[in-house]
Amino acid sequence: MDAGLEPGLRDGLRQLGLALSDAQVAQLVGYAGLIQKWSRVYNLTAVREPGEILSHHLLDCLTLIGPLRRHTAGRALKLLDVGSGAGLPGVVIAIVCPEIEVDCVDTVAKKAAFIQQAAVALKLANLRGLHSRVEQLDGQYELVTSRAFASLADFVALSAAALAEQGVWLAMKGKYPAEEVAALPPKVEMFHVEQLEVPGLAAQRCLLWLRPSALT
Ligand SMILES: C[S@@+](CC[C@H](N)C(=O)[O-])C[C@H]1O[C@@H](n2cnc3c(N)ncnc32)[C@H](O)[C@@H]1O
Image (cartoon, rainbow, N blue to C red):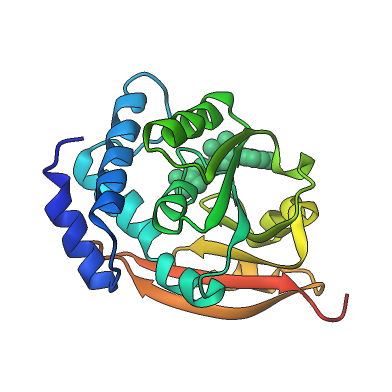
């Protein structure tokens, strides 16, 4: 990816109040380049233009970092990104939070292969691509994320076996999904919601934090 992306990225990081090292900024720019390169050959993501990769992918997923850091308070933990596609938000998290071990799962082999390739190219020892259906995973993940994957009810049902006992789900949605929240089963409780602005986009981001209900 041309370094032309960097000023816009740094501007967005400032707006989000995120201080990253130069090496992390270079990894994000490098990741955008990999998405662009691989998307010429494989149908990784519909968003392929540099400006759009910056706003719709990088900055959009970076909105999650502040809330995530507040939640983890720097603790090392295992995170699963479900239906990760080109690695969103999983790869962004792996770059910005090296203390978090990130597994990105997708049913499409070439998408999991892309994540593995990104881990090597960007020297991310904390990132893995898994080729699997999420419902076949029986991991012990303290955090399970998704963006543009499924309804909230399907997301929690399909990934329940992968969640550790004290684990939580973090779903990235557009505007507040009232109908999806209403359709959640009683055994799942939503314990926090955050609405965020994506720098450079008119669109909003809604982060929903969910966990198994205390009643279960
Ligand atoms: C719309 S894409 C979203 C990709 C990425 N999270 C993003 O925000 O750009 C949904 C992805 O979920 C994957 N997927 C669908 N069902 C799945 C399942 N049961 N387990 C794992 N991945 C699945 C698809 O292959 C696809 O890559």
